[in-house]
Image (cartoon, rainbow, N blue to C red; front, side, top):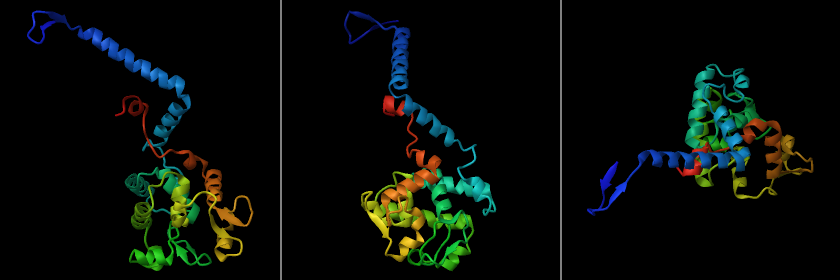
Length: 240
């Protein structure tokens, strides 16, 4: 196809077929570069996409079914509030399992009277305008609304949760989100240490943030490895 450009007498030939071939070559070249240079990243992204497939049963859902009356609706709501919090639903499932084994009425009288799916403290419940007794009488879907409210406030006060460990710290000891991994949450001369002694991975009489990280990695390896971002190869290559 010939066009007269810029009003000159010179004619330029635009071959759209050739342009298409060049564009295809650039695309394939970039894709192959990522496959060769970043094989682990591409494998991780593919695995994440597979895990995120809504047709697949959500991580730990089989355990939740021991207590949840309507598992499909529970799964749907977990995915919904996880999306609003910008975290993988696997993280939230792991934290709820760690705290209550998905028993919405679970109470830990020894640990300060905490209750619910993420073991709300009396002080936290009061800030949200409810009591622990009211929480215990809620179904799973109702409690998830308060879980979202609480975690959203923790994120806004501190920073977004960037790992499973940070999410659990946000539930267990939100002040720790501003500390490094050597920070001690509890020590052996404190009552709270004995309530949480199972988290002391190296059994040195201190529960540090590093202990929490090791615990989550050991007990929930699948959720631990799920990345926060669902970024694809195309967004990396083309910046979309």
